Length: 257
Image 1 (cartoon, rainbow, N blue to C red):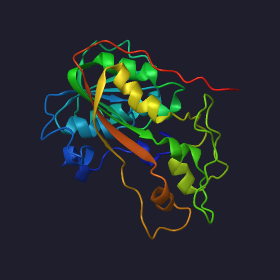
Image 2: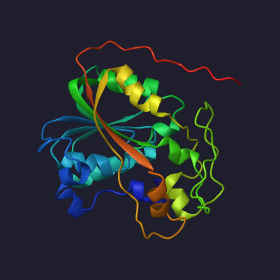
Image 3: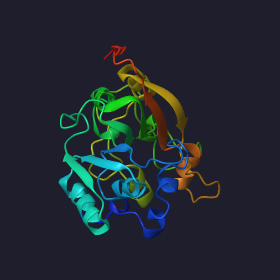
Image 4: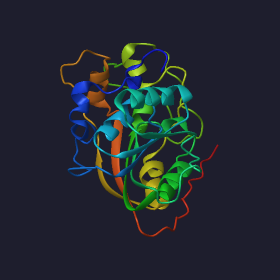
């Protein structure tokens, strides 16, 4: 994706960098300023997230598994004169970061690439200071369950909700499908119990939740916007780190084979 210049790997534009907080915080969750705040952009390499938060005056650390994505952050930092700290590692292992190091953790869509979100949320909780904010976006479970082509009855649910195996890849390579499912990626469905409950058990309190609107009533059949009219593709969650560092044990459901 980095080599191909995918839209997710393109730096912010001049116009966006002129109003960075407005671009990254349309919900107003971060307040009027993040100048001087310690921000972790988690699984967020590619040059876009880091440049926007740095332009807003934050002290930015970027974690990504891909060295190619982090190289894009290096280039943007060199071109713009931003000071960034870059760490190549998985989101489940943040051993290179200190306890309570960050005021804000920004986590774009990526939890779908790990089999369990529990270790991710535990690590995020560890590196977030008490009272710190964790803003994450995820693929909605139903979006990973449903078909990508609309029938007379809408978009059919194809895949089980209770599962511990990856969601089968889509058969279509249409542009609307590629926007929802990255080609060649192994993706896991995480239930609402995993997402919301997992954050709470890790030591966060949920403060807000929105479903970014991509629906368009007159969109062409089978387009990204048409499917979003029936099925919201993403959910964005605002959580705050509690002062209590204790972590509860998750409740597990046992399924018959």
